[in-house]
Image 1 (cartoon, rainbow, N blue to C red):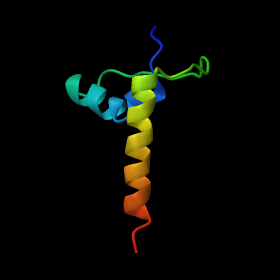
Image 2 (tube, rainbow, N blue to C red):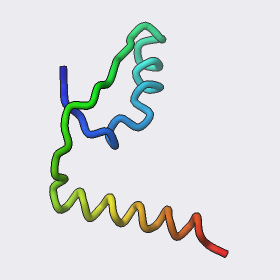
Image 3 (tube, rainbow, N blue to C red):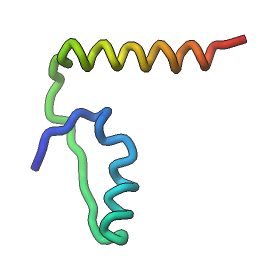
Image 4 (cartoon, one colour):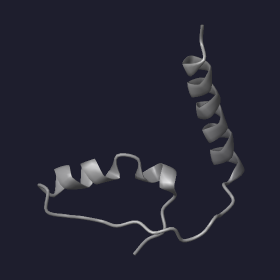
Length: 58
């Protein structure tokens, strides 16, 4: 078992199936809310702002 931030699991299922020829599986369950380290928080905010700006261009 492992605790992994949800953001890090993006496309994990597809990668896992590809690496194991479709034989592996995994499950997720909520564990806890936790503070994000400052450097990662800044990166996430920057990514969000960029995606938001691109989605709302006129």
